[in-house]
Length: 407
Image (tube, rainbow, N blue to C red; front, side, top):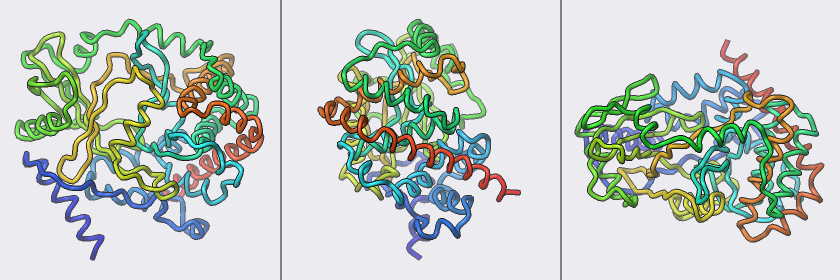
């Protein structure tokens, strides 16, 4: 009965939102990161575990839920990206004590090869880390194992590639940040020339007022819904938007793990080249909360992660309670692109992974524990690699089981 009432409350909010209404309330909590008991994993199919992990969204956002399940079936890396609850249940069930005792930082929580991206900085575009939905205070080993495991899924369990990432991490803790990857250099050069006008032309019409361009990954909103969205953005008090009208907005489906979250994109301004595109994205409690503890304020822990991973030059991020949901609000940067694993040639992979390690090590070092992090990686290198190999190969096997159980 409680679960039924919970779904009714979620559905009622969606109906209210679609009617152009808004309200105030506490954010609906994400179910525990371990809804399938660890001891039962051997008797519960992978597919049933994944469906249980995503059950919260089936009635709340059925379109996003269907898109996410389809995405999980596309490729092993997509499955890895979209099944972090399963990944972490397996990890924490067998996490060695020495890795659990790693120096504490703000962990990203879902660090993988495609969560590194081009970002605007004080000295121009740089390659960094974004998307902190799962961030929480915790042992640095969590990020290392998750990212190393993504390397296994993308490139196999070649120890030289895994070691390259850890070599880079060690350098990053010492402040050695020069990047050498051809793929990263090429992307940064391209994104450094990206302009606001080009982004507006790509994503909006040239009409006055502007309209968001429709596509397979968007859903139109009514004027009443757009007005509600503008009120939510105004409540978030994102700097630079004061008084600017929302010309148009759409619901957008993007990402992999976040495909079933509510996400909106709106263009604010007066039809000129200075118009801004604003992203509004639902923020749930971290999938790691069941393992590392629940913070009192999800918006605050997200902003804390932004500060650690992106530093003082980070773009502003705001949040607001909208209905029963916490929504993140930020500008869409003109430079926003990532290097996909398949875009990195075999001869560039060592340099690419070393660079990603440098970026991660430097970000963790902003916690003030660079020396302890370096000592930890030196001492636990072999165990980190073995643990990531186990986790990555298990994800590959889970992907096969997920697809096989569908037939």
